Amino acid sequence: MSSPAATAAGLRIMLISSAYNSLTQRMDAELTDRGHRVASHVVEDDFGLRVAVAQHRPQLIIAPMLKTALPADIWKAAVCLIVHPGPVGDRGPSSLDWAITEGAERWGVTVLQAVEEMDAGDIWATVECPLPPVGKSDLYRGEIADAALAAVHLAVDRFALRTYVPEPLDRALAARAGTAAVTGTLKPYLRQHARRIDWTHDTTATVLRKLRAADSFPGVLDTLDGREFFLYGGHEEEALRGRPGELLARRAGAVCRATADGAVWLTQLRPRRKPGGPATYKMPATIALGAKAAKRLPEIPAPLGAGPGTWADIRYRERDSVGYLSFSFPSGGMSTAHCARLLQAYEQARSRPTSVLVLGGTRDFFSNGIHLGVIEAAPSPADESWRNINAMNDLVHAVLTTTDKVTIAALGGNAAAGGVMLALAADEVWAREGVVLNPHYRKMGLTGSEYWTYTLPLRAGVDQARELLNDARPVSALRAREIGLVDYVIPATPDAFPAEVETVAARMAASPELTAWLRGKAHQRAKHEEARPLSSYREAELAKMRRIFYDQESEYHRLRYAFMRKL
Image 1 (tube, rainbow, N blue to C red):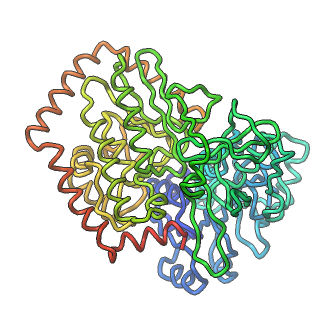
Image 2: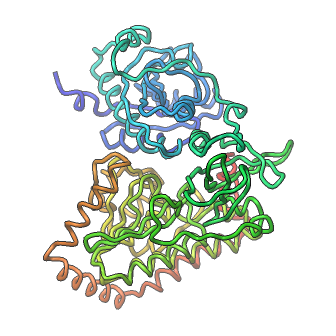
Image 3: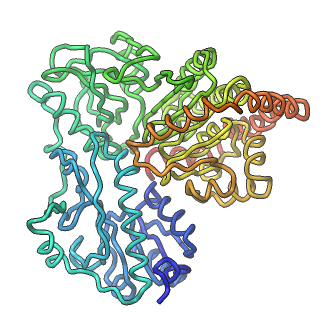
């Protein structure tokens, strides 16, 4: 009998999801890497789903993220595997929310067969994982996604063998009774009344759990400055104190609010939708509150070398001749202000007597390019788009023209569009295994900038660059290494990734070949500049982008509006 991997190769697999989200993209990329023919369908209605299934005739259907039940005729005609973000026995639509709210330290992902009763089908695979104290969306893209892919690959291999018999739920629970295995129970939808924060009595730890459990969606409904908002973020403040519920300060677009025994930073807010009004979207807290309300709060910047007890979205530290410039922006978007502050920090880091400079290196998003939320909220989205793309270009240019240090982009999380190009500006790109790159702009109706016409063909070749941009498909870290976008893939958990980066960076800084390598780098940059100046690439890219930004009928404005409101 052939091995499972060989037997599984070449299946026609269809991914059915409520949105082409990060987990669906990663599943698409990794299953494609394994030789399967993968088609994806975002469910809008049952009729469209039936048409898509009839067209693709999948041998196996997988639902990475599905908010509605599959029609019975679909799951009766083909094996349909549901990816549930909970351990064996866990059921309900708020699995991860409950786990975080109740302080679970370990969790899991279960792949089970679709049947009439939700989350009650036979089990094809289950994988456990840790739950570190971070936000739900961060966990979902990190530990939960790692466990989900491990479980899905195992389930696909078992399906391909044609001899595996999935385990009924009751038998699986009985087998785990009395063991150390993590199990769950049926939980109801976690509604806002259960998420509500009592600022007078809730401790900082309690507030953080509530915020983290609602991260990304749905947020925690609350009142600020007399208006209703959904709150997002949740970072502990070690020094500021005030009357519980009081807003204390602002920093980097976030606001600090007092709890019963401390304070927390809220990074984003989403206004509550008014009856009959348009859908709302997340934006930096100070923008959502409005300039007048935000300016009443004192601005308390965090020092670049802030310690772990101080919340900061940009940090810098040094060790063993290596500088580490880390940054973490909500949802990966980089506004004009984010770019300006990061460029200022980069210039300071570049002036330090180090030989290696690492950018990023934290868990979750590296960067997704320009900040569509800030742009959408601006009085003139066209003007803000233009400011934002120029600020991104300024930052990328600074990285490209650094010739006295080895620059490393360390991707602990996903990157897209201009965020990928920011990474490609570095000398080397290191990515955690499991990271997904979307090196294209087309799905937002843009031609792209950030010097991509220089860096992308230089790394991947002209033909491959054109294919990446036109296909607009997600690329796994392993595939990115094959085609030249990534130099080193690090197999590590999200929490372990920074330490692994530090180990390799220190080894590079100590290399006796480093001086000669830097001389070669400076020489190559000078040759490239003589052949075609970087300013020429920038001008050509931005000329196209400007036309798109200032054309109110361009697809970009329609797509951005729909994307921000999840239409």
